[in-house]
Length: 46
Image 1 (spheres, rainbow, N blue to C red):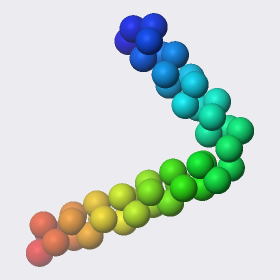
Image 2: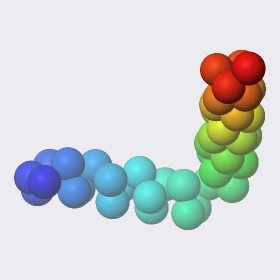
Image 3: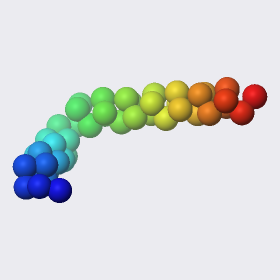
C-alpha cells in the first residue's frame, strides 16, 4: 500500500473515532449490507 492510501485510511479512522454520528451511520450501513448478503446467500441455496 502506498503512503497516500495509508494516510487516507488513517484520516478516515480518526474522523470516525471523533464523530459518533458518522460512526453510527457507517455501522448501520454495514448492518444493512450484511443483512442483504445473508438474504442473497439464502436465496442462492434454495
